[in-house]
Image (cartoon, rainbow, N blue to C red):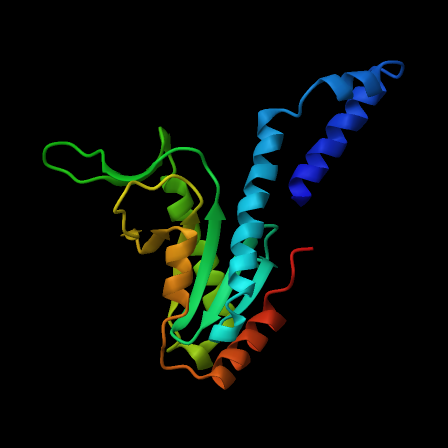
Length: 207
């Protein structure tokens, strides 16, 4: 949403500068570019997933939102510390049906993530750096804590779908995400809180 607001403000300033007399009218009768509106669409997905995660606190889940990846300008949308371990969660809201497709040839396998006609495999590949940042923030004393990646797609899922893994990343949807995160695990409430405090200290808010 910050990026949407930034792009929107830049466009408004540019239009008013170029057309001082009718700039306000032009802005009123024209829409934001699709590339700008996409940021607002994505923000809705992040907010929805964030609200779901916050609602799991009674089940022993502690969530951190919108954290800066150290040494970069990139952010991590959500980190959920649960009784079964840590999940790094990236929500996306795209139109179209979610599919795992093999686009390889007769003698090769090339599994890819598609949402509608869009090849979204890069979303899966991008999760590796986020998981690495969380693992580094934990430090060597928490090496045994599993840190896993989850891509939560607020899209259309075929009937009888099941979450699936692609390149070590779990691809799922909000309801299935909720059910997974509240599963019991080896870490009690005190340990979850301790881990969350460590990550909260080392992964600073992006804003």
